[in-house]
Amino acid sequence: MKLFHAAIIITSFLFVSCITTNKGDDPTANEEQDYGFLEDRNSEGHWDQIPEKSGYINEGFGEQHQNVQQDAFGTSIVHGSRPALSQNGLKTHEFRDARTGLVVQRTAYPSSWTVISKPSYTVDQKLPVFMIQTSGPNDLKSFNTPFRINISYQNPQTYQFMQKATYASMHRPMVSNQQILKEEVQPRMEKSGFAYVKNIRLTTSENFMKNKIKKEGQGQVQAELLTTVWENDEGQKALVNIGKIYRQQPLSTIDIMTLWMYSVDYTFVDAGHFEKTVDAFENALVNTKEDLQWQQYVAQLSRQRQQQAIRDHQIHMRNKDAAFQAHQRKMQGIWAAQDANYASFMNKHLGPGSDRTHRNFVNMINEEETVYNPLDGTTYQVNAFSEQNWMDGNGNLVQNNDLFYTPNGDINLNNRDWVQVVPQN
Image 1 (cartoon, rainbow, N blue to C red):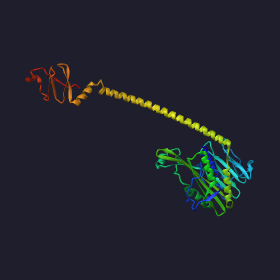
Image 2: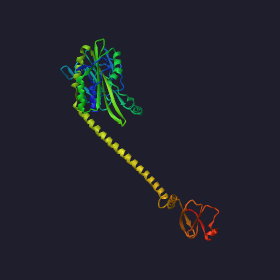
Image 3: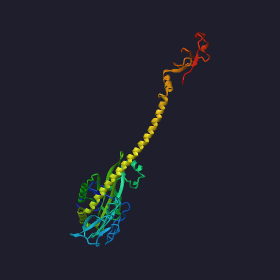
Image 4: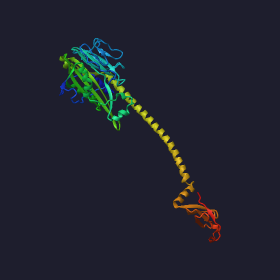
């Protein structure tokens, strides 16, 4: 989160010079480039009105006020409210964390400017991002809009699957900065009397941000910047910067989730002072100093969160293992019961205690029957499928299918005693 926090602060100062004009006059026709890093968003504010010379209204601040001291909510202003550090016509503004009271960073602005900053904790409850409002000579008015955070997926079916998720209201396919310019910025600027002039490159700012990303080692974060110049018939120029950052991560084996967010920065000033004003914002950006005590606080917070993440992971793994072991014990009980049932079945039908069943099974294969001769007390294997089986005391067998026949009356059998035997089941 430290990197995101730093990027948010950097984004607040994207009003810089070293201007290089892009080709073409269509504000949505130029190819978007990947220059740096930005972040944060407050979903509540809505940009309503471009400032006029008589005053302005913008998101997060309301009407312009003078000589406002720092309040309980962390809003701070450097304009006659307290002694300010001055050097070569500059005045230092402190961006202060309302939760800890620590100074996050210090930025030197021209002493004739009035700067108001207000911390926001939309993204992180511990690390602030700042809404900034600036006013000064030559009808200078500048402010940034709240970041709008969105989540997009590559697979359209994921949107339907995630409709009931906590962050479903943030679902929106990622769009280009040109589309944001065309759909959001251009109508508002034109409605307020400003016409598009050209796209420019904020080279120094872009390089500053690239170095910040490289220093923090967050190459997986991508950024897209689009900066445009506008003018009206009253001799004013405007610098409008759209900053978007995004980060992708696998959601499953079939999809990728992209967290993306954007903000728009507006600066208005008399045309004759446009480039000098932009230079002043650039100087303020590149000379911003992050407070050492704040850096230590963020580092400590990062370590605590890493340790908590490790503990949470360990607890999760222990719970997962306990659930697995409980499942294994449950399944082992089920398997033991199944094994007992199977053993009982096998013992009953094919085991040592099931000789009769086994014998019947073998007789079926051999097409035989087992009969018991009570005259000699012996069992015999005889051919199956005869209606009657007769045996004498010597084990002689007579088979026939005539139900009225009896060998005891047959003179051809020497008047021996015959008994009818039946299969043993």
